[in-house]
Image (tube, rainbow, N blue to C red; front, side, top):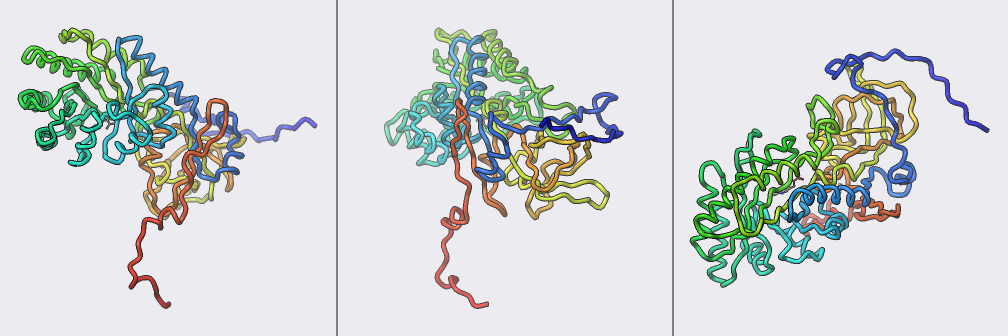
Length: 453
Ligand SMILES: *Cc1c(COP(=O)(O)O)cnc(C)c1O
């Protein structure tokens, strides 16, 4: 029997203010009924709700596209996967299989990279928090230590002197790239001479191998030109080292921070329209390096630590509608089982959220709330959505970066994470937490073990 379309009476839709043109923002909603060939409904039936789903195919595609963007423009390029962006082992190993080194910012992340089998010499150790034992481990493994502050520099000198080992180091440089507020809390400042001072201290000490220069100018950067400024400032430092010490560094590490296609809160247009492409960033960086005054015998390797731009659009978060209600001002509110605990990036993005089943053409401005008994648990303040019913599913797009590391174990437990491989095969790569996951970390003092109520 042919299925007959359901009759819908025509509706008059109000145009909302603050829109790009007189027709308003597109409010046509295409449901997302399947992900990589798997029906959302089936995935939720099998793995529960909420559920993170990651596409291996998309991860590899994004990586290869980025690598190609840089390699066609610059002779020697090395990517290093930013662990804090998503440090699930399976995800890291996909990038490592593609040739990416590891970029870590804590002893925990460092150990995770080693455990994944990354050779110590291919781990870049960034960040302000490196303990004495972290540094000793990194030196022994011949890792690349990016010095953040003078206290770390002096600590390294002490260890080097005492252990007779030569740490391989770079300094992190912060600078004015024309994007404000300036990120000046990490590393040594370029403009006020701190960076040059730190480099001289390293060269004069004679205790360390100065192998690189590093910067990471910010995150979700929308200006390729800021990277051009950063690259030319690092190139200038490299040339100063060459002039004064006849010393050639091996690499220039330009960090990450390239914007993904997500939409920042308060942005007038969606991220898919305004974020520059990886090719725009590559062009700015490669040109700035090659056009600089740096004249080494061997061109330095260009290291890229891109995180979010390589992964954001390769993951989705599937969820379920718990209830609908009317707020006191008459506005519609829909409560999901996805909150800021699972979707931490809801604090700064307006995520694209689509229904996972066929919808009618009726839409309404809706506040999307999470399941937490907390006022801050808002997924979208106000979004025009088709009406969803209890039990319906939704798909949140572009969730690959920072959610699976910054998620909170708060009020509820963290859900399953599923990887879909290139052939469509399903792999659970992180089990949902249980009460045991949490209580196994707790210790009950004997005198508190019993009570009578
Ligand atoms: C976080 C971080 C990155 C990755 O940043 P994205 O915005 O995810 O690209 C790279 N390098 C350093 C030092 C970082 O702290």
